[in-house]
Image (cartoon, rainbow, N blue to C red; front, top):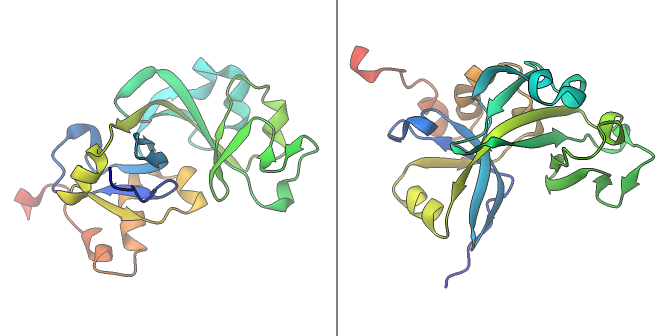
Length: 195
């Protein structure tokens, strides 16, 4: 088997050619990517369901908009918490070497939250928190095939992507900040037939 270069912590930005309605103009944060497959969450699919409606104890830590996001089409009945823990400024007394208790680093300041842990463990350390229902998943080699077909752009993530206050504009914003021809893709019309 060929070695898979990890894309963990990077963003998958759907190309305009991607035909799957689950991922139309999606921005996916990859939480895990290795030879066994890939797992990520769609950052720009807010639902009308408030975090307090399903995870009341975490509602106070959830960033605006304080709703659950549809993380992808897999396991919609499960919840994932993704939080940004700023550098040393958010030090909490309950810390491990790699961050506060109840938080596992994925990439840089971005990590997964143990939603079974008491929110108080993370309250002092978390800069922003998003709750996702479901996730996006790919089996071994499946994502690499989609990348080869041109379905996704792979770009660097920024901690603010997780907590964008305007998730409906994230696809364009991520593309616009690229220092390449990708910045021009941000102007691609929603419906090219009307162009």
